[in-house]
Length: 180
Image (cartoon, rainbow, N blue to C red; front, side):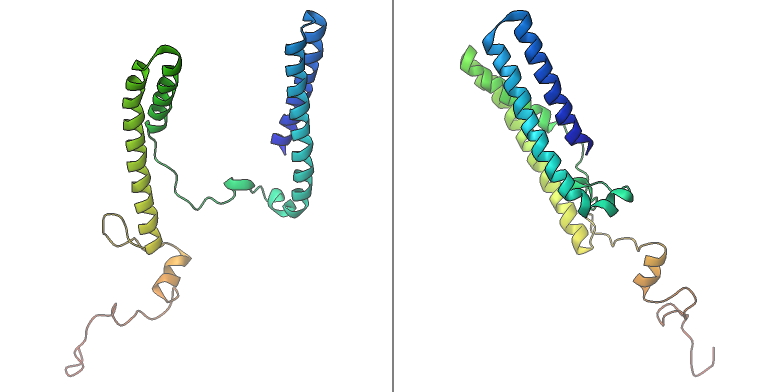
């Protein structure tokens, strides 16, 4: 809900600055842009506020429990690894865009980090996909067996309770003919 109120504050600020700008400069274009920005942000605020109020009744239990909403509510997915690839891609795109103003040499200068960053980003995405699919299948990426869960889940995983008789495979082998 704080994000929605933030839009309201931005709208009020832009409208106040737009009116002040008119009285200080009497310049129509800047005033219209500031007031237009304030009105557009205000319209967005009203739409988001009505949607937030509608969703607030459905999510009252989640909010009371301190649960985040939106895409942050589900934390089951893996966290992406740190990488410089987005920075390299952004630098490459910016340099290629500068070619329109400064000549075709910027295309060459921007293509190198753009392609290297894109290749690195693709490699890390493939690695994360492999980790996710192997985790879904219960197999680690290095081929080793996954570690058994701990606590109550471990007892369920083993299929028996804490005081249960050990499984036949866990008992020491005895010779029934000799009794020992």
